[in-house]
Image 1 (cartoon, rainbow, N blue to C red):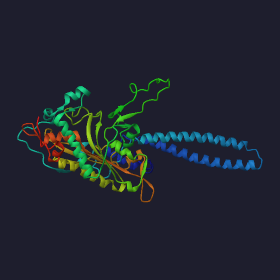
Image 2 (image 1 turned 135 degrees about the horizontal axis):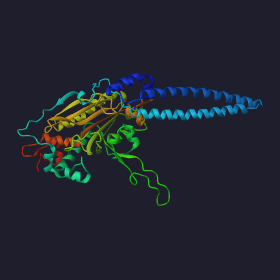
Image 3 (image 1 turned 60 degrees about the vertical axis):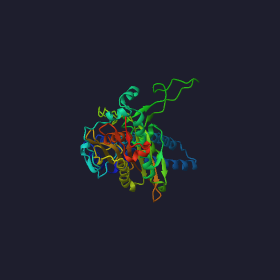
Length: 444
């Protein structure tokens, strides 16, 4: 979340930066925030006055008792002050809770270098790599190419509904090979530590990385209990506790980043570089019927994720490094791509700067997102209470970064479409040959 002191000291600057995301900014109720701040200051001032008066009365009570005088009136006055102090403390807690809830729904401020734009049309191309292949035939899409190789959407729909797929045989092996190739690259060449994380996490974990409360409808909820409700009572006659609110992860960024929650790290612990291969679960509540064909937008998909936890002064360089790591995957697979700097209106909630990598898909005759790399500065760290000891020995917020390295399903789509031949076979990238048992082509 944002630093509330920044809002208190320079609210106009915060609103100006939020307006870059969307104008007029819908994120912060400025009038309500200002009203709460006025009341908070008044209560704190009154509380300090009451505490000073109580201290003075307490001293007078001691003096009166020492002289054998009646201290009852003074004691009554102190008790009255205690009641008012309790009322003030309760109201102050309520104000702080409301302010905290308001901040939880406000996105990160975009970095000054981020291009300003309302939507994806404002994104800026940074560079391209590779040349899109030219075919002497009309290229097929991955759905038609994958069907003879074991890519089965009918069975996926039969088992789980729309936006699910079932992989068997050669295409399942290719999917596994891609994930293993990516993990080996990131751990052996890029210095990441491989992780295996839970796929179900608690509510506060998602609050830490920013998926909750704003994006609850995009998550798959998990409940332990009957129909998501607490049972009336157990077999021993004791009432059972309500089930814990949990969710399926939409990315392993969530679990890996939260490994530093509520910790104070030594500066020598940083940087931390983690990677994991996991399934990701997304309801696609806001997809609006886009990409209903094929594997581009699924409720369940696999991703190899990268996370870095760094000192603040290193986060911009870490973002460039992470983008380079994702690019290396595409380059070694020989897949043409471009790097896009996302504009203010297209960035994610947690990010202050994001680059997307878009891979060339011949059947669509366009580039499509395959990786997103973001610097979240201290935004997630404040929500997680993740800090480190800086050079002055003081606690400071870490900076967190995340990036896809890559989305496995979309990479499989790109390998099928870019490597297709007229007879329907698929020429595999050389980097995958060792992971495919020496196979250089896939045939039905």
